[in-house]
Image (cartoon, rainbow, N blue to C red):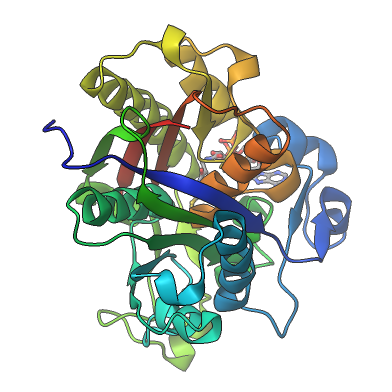
Length: 330
Ligand code: ACO
């Protein structure tokens, strides 16, 4: 990988989850499931769910306000806003434009990026290219999703897995040796049907018949996605680490996409990552899609598990299929 013109990195990170908490015991009253089944198969204990009046841009805005305050950046210094999401407020306009207006980021360009649950890693990588090239100085990267809005709450095989949330990071030039050291991005569209929302796009428009069949919700081949996820996360993180010449001994912590504790444990084993170096908060939030990595990142920075100078490896997978990882010196 060519050396960047100037190093780019995250100078602040923040997150936000909606107030309402839905526990496994609440789900026991909604579908034929149990706290025990959900805990042992997924590691999830509870998740946050948006209220009726909230949506993706609301969560994105809250996380963004915290991130720019922490970075001591004013809204008019932001050059670009990228929102990674699979649940935009609307098919168009982009959720990034809604955030731009509400933040008062009058100089910023804005667009949404769709790469399934790997969206935050893709967006971070794109942002770093603009900053490294010198084309821009300040990019706001947001991962935000309300999977609760595309979940069939009568389907026990999916509804126990998901939650809502947002994370935001400010990407700027950083001192030499810091920031984004390497990345790996990949995709395999042959697996597109393993994880999808089939209806509501240009191919299969929404009709009453489609809605009656509940085809506007997430459908997933859980076992296939599980196997893919373990392999893709392990291989992607290994590639990114090799590109900047580090080994697992150099890594301060890993931040995997928080989909399922068993997926995280299996990928960690493959990477020879000790448990205490793997950030896990899937128990509290479930799978929040594009928000999952920044939610875990923010938590680990705030509680001191990530310290200045640590090497952090973020790694994710998602619908597409997609995968990606990045190595960051904090
Ligand atoms: N409660 C109780 N039983 C359940 C539940 C539930 N919530 N869900 C499924 N079961 C049952 C099944 O019906 C099945 O019963 P059967 O044996 O009588 O047929 C049994 O439990 C086992 O089902 P499996 O699907 O084999 O269970 P598994 O151990 O594979 O776990 C899971 C399922 C948790 C979905 C797992 O496969 C997984 O995590 N896959 C990856 C999911 C993922 O990461 N998705 C990414 C989504 S990202 C996005 O959508 C944006």
